Image (tube, rainbow, N blue to C red):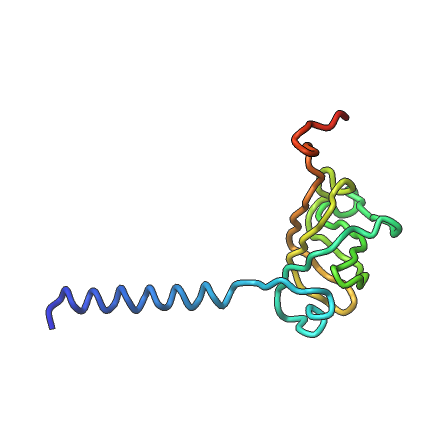
Length: 128
């Protein structure tokens, strides 16, 4: 075999290894029930903020811990610990996507995505 063929085979093998390792680290969308069934796996959980429950953020005690309660799309309510500071405009969000794992009855989120209300309604800007 020529050296060029050997180098080509090595490059293909490395590419296949990279593809398989990236597929292993992907997370999937789930609800709290599924996340509770597999506490060692990371999930994206979609839901809404439960505005009836308190939000706890004490930056003087721990600036990287924000606690709140979320309802998933099936209506199951769970306590959430976000290991970041409280996001700006958090209370205005329409929908939340938490990225993290279940630990007992609490969901520990490493990141959060928020869908906020649109500034536009039927093509007309809303006045604040």
